[in-house]
Image (tube, rainbow, N blue to C red; front, side, top):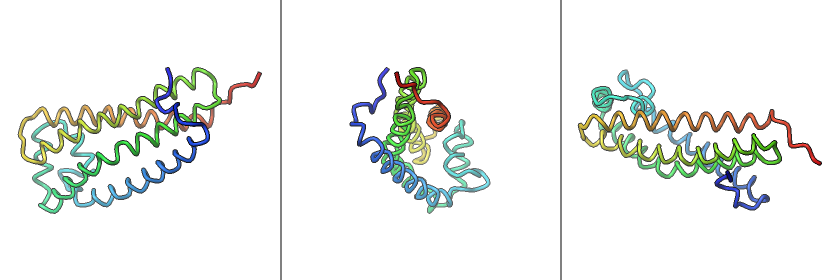
Length: 178
């Protein structure tokens, strides 16, 4: 399987990675600021608690624990996250592409699969945010909380696994030159 970003010229991969990594770190910092008003006793981890609520009752108790200002922060954060998704997916996928360069075949294949996984994680994030938006705007259909929790769990698993595989690239020996 080919890595999803293997079409990029080799000399542009590292500069693009650094740009997307810097954007990821910056935007993540913005999200930390946006998350502060969302941390309540009902949602101790802010938006992450909301993402993983899993039930309509838990999700609605979190929304009810937020004042109007916090709900605006949550709404803005959900919308802003749609801009963040391609940024973090590109950063991780590029990191995996770089980690797999000049490595043994099994590792290069693993980084290709996980490169796709980073992009798929963004799709799960989009579905999750749609579900959370419905809850935030008062839709009491209990399936939205379940969908959000499932999508968030898959997203986090793919991102964490991808990050571990990329970091593992520093420990894997380069392919022997013949």
